[in-house]
Image 1: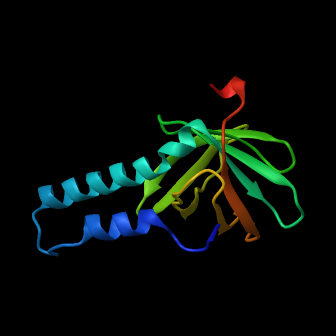
Image 2 (image 1 turned 90 degrees about the horizontal axis):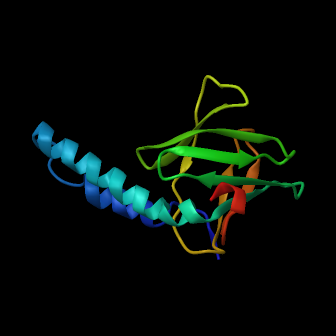
Amino acid sequence: MVRSSVPLAAAVIALATAGSVFAADSSVNLRIAQTVAAVERVLEPAFSNTIVSTYPDGRQARLWLEPDGGYRAVGRRGDPTGGTWRIKGEKLCLRQSHPFSVPFSYCTPVMGGEIGDVWIRRAVTGELLRVRLERGRPDSLG
């Protein structure tokens, strides 16, 4: 199944952030925390599986998210990278710190779904990618 829009996460965020513009700060902070928690629940299947991005030339990159906010990846050229991830609004943002730090984050709409579902996204280079969640992860990643 190909999904070209933000699925469940967008609906969760829209519902979680709906309400009065004049809400008290503590109410707004609570809604933000609930929204982040809801988006992280959508990401939960990624913690024990592999996110595979296929580039137009057929090469693939693999990404493994950790529940603690870290990630590891192998790029389409086979280069290992790593860093941290966080939720920013309705986007998943990655910031590389290994093998070197980069001064920006790459953000993409959060995806949710089942093993084998496919989404179309843009790479940091602007290329269109086919992204899918693949069952399992290498033993070396735990």
